[in-house]
Length: 378
Ligand SMILES: *Cc1c(COP(=O)(O)O)cnc(C)c1O
Image 1: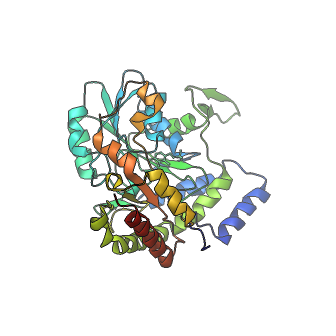
Image 2 (image 1 turned 30 degrees about the vertical axis):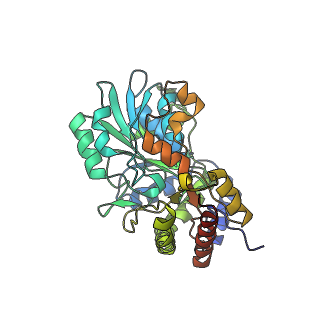
Image 3 (image 1 turned 90 degrees about the vertical axis):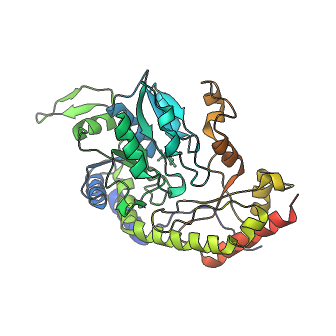
């Protein structure tokens, strides 16, 4: 049996292990000097903007919505084709998610269709750069300005990606990143929030930790109901190392994506396999995803995933259209509302993609997939 290939795997070096060990020995393992150093390094990475670190990407989204005062009666426009966290935070804030179907080519929210979804209750747009492919920021911000809407960018998957030569996070309104273990850079669990100029950074810090403000005499006050969202110094030590490598990691992912597209170029049209757009300047290639031509195959997506697994290749699904989950149907969402997201959600699979993946492994993934699809043509 040939070696097995995971669909993702973090790249962690000996320096990271040594730095985490140093934090463990220091006697201060939760939020402290490493978090402050990590925030300073992130701020530099994002062109000097103010950045606060959190214990998850989800937490940054919750805090951004809270800072904007988004709650009961508000609507937030987002995509139905994303990790469910994107929409869960809207519901948990007490607001209503309003979904707009995706552009089938980019698989991202179709910016052209957003205006039709705006109502007097709309407060914000929450776009997602699926797989690291950026949503068109020019059209997005023109639209937001035109309707007086705030933007909370869910850039969980697009750390290090750019739009028109500008790094995501270095411009825009609230910008949220995740450092979950599967993202392009990780702190095991974690995230950061880039704040717009009009945001109150001190309020952001109180929202992050129980609303507590301390005074110089050792006393404290609580003026908001904050949560428990602070990052640990252990995690920040990992993050400081990851941040040094993020651009190299992403460059490697771009090479691998190019290899995938080259290897699949001939077979894709013949088999009806839908490839992602070949963006090698802006995307960070968080994932390499294809849509299976299920109506031309005698196997299901589950059968395909099992057939790949039998060859030692892990394949993921990111994501089913989320408005069809039980909890969302209970809010009144029904099948047929967002046909592109629903079709892509049924057909999409994520192939292995991570910096340590080798060219010969990409070739093996492609040959194995082409072979399985060819043998199961209807
Ligand atoms: C990973 C992810 C999140 C949440 O990040 P966590 O760090 O896991 O909380 C939110 N949105 C999208 C699109 C993600 O991929």
